[in-house]
Length: 603
Image 1 (tube, rainbow, N blue to C red):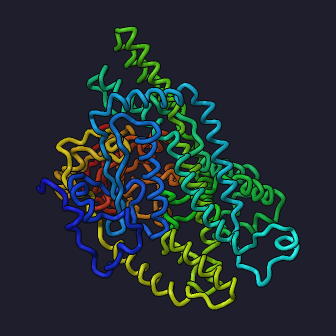
Image 2 (image 1 turned 45 degrees about the vertical axis):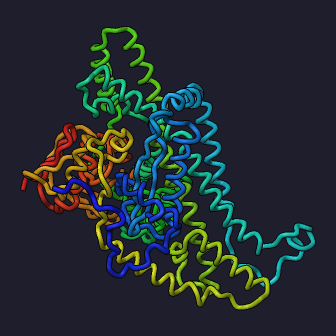
Image 3 (image 1 turned 135 degrees about the vertical axis):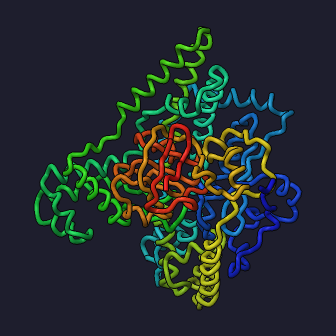
């Protein structure tokens, strides 16, 4: 077994991917100028959020997200031990490395954190209400941005005689600048609350580990389960629409095949028309939901690919016709939550400990809904709008001959889109032929080829020298990276003695046939009673949880979205196994022990 991962400077460029570095901004690359620092750190590939190769424009959210996370740790809140997270791109994949704060500053930072975080914790509800207003306003601003081909002649009344002094040539550039600015604002808003949500849970977690030394991590997670969050609303809307179809007698339309055939049948009756109207009411905003993590332009958005929600609704209709209950087992989860809390409260003999336990638990439950809700409002709804607006702009360039498909715009860096817009504007203003049609097609073709080459090579899960013991709590709880998982990576990830170990993410033990799903496009292949095995799951996969018995993932920790969603749906889950999709094949019988974090290969 190796004792360290390769240096980022020793990783070879995959054949056919030469020049991949030009696709990304230079600060996001490993560099000789920072080699001393970069070689001294342990880097892990973030398969929870960015499991695939980043196209140039998609890397924008990677950079915005981690920079925003870091600034809140370091400059806003001063989380005592954490100086943010360093991020790099290597061969198209994102790598992260938590940066510890100087031990000599911990005391001063703790005082600042107590003051600043304490203000949020004391005023959580009112500040969170303000956040909801801010985020909806931001989405509205994004929606208002329009990108259209520049006119042959500016409108006399609106542009010239109005005295505006500005025309559409200025506006199209300004709208792109605003989109980028709003994207960065979005990610600042994202981490205004998220780090605090994790901090409150971590404080409760560490307190439990102190007063109950042998308490399992899963028992602590159970104490904050049974939450009612907006992240589950899209799935709830699908279930509502399925029930409406059955109750109004239009369910048979969903056996017609494709969406168009179904809608034609629905339009033929008043009940069907009412169902369509109800679907449209749900669609905004709840079907601005991505089939993936929300970070990739290729992920399908429900509202733009209605065959996705229609297929989920059809499955729910079938389940209803079979007499199945579509409800999440909320009552059972809350009963188990209360049982665990009662059990551990009884172990506390000191009244001060009892008071501290209840106070920390109460705060963790108060802030916990945000830990999940932000995922809908930021990664899904807001990003969905941004992807749509970028395609709208991409289509403008298609009409002007800069490239052939609207999605080609995502093969430009965000600063390069600004250059292309300037080229278009100058050629319109003069007028003369733009340089873009002769400049961009080859670059885009090369970058598509490079991305395909990068995607064929599995990235190293880690880089550099791992710590002897992984103790950084967010690394463990969110990403599922532990001393055991690092040891497994170094050993090549073989399933020793027919077992894989990961995080005990959601309790229960089941046996069944595995279904390995490597992309959302394969979700329709899942059969009733199978066990889902995937690199990761996203909240938008929840509609298939009624089919499966359990979930196993390569990535993710106790507090990853996959783990939380599985607990709320009552599904056993083992996350962060590292190599489940490499060691398990579809049709193989496996046992999933979500209580102890063990996956056993039975044949």
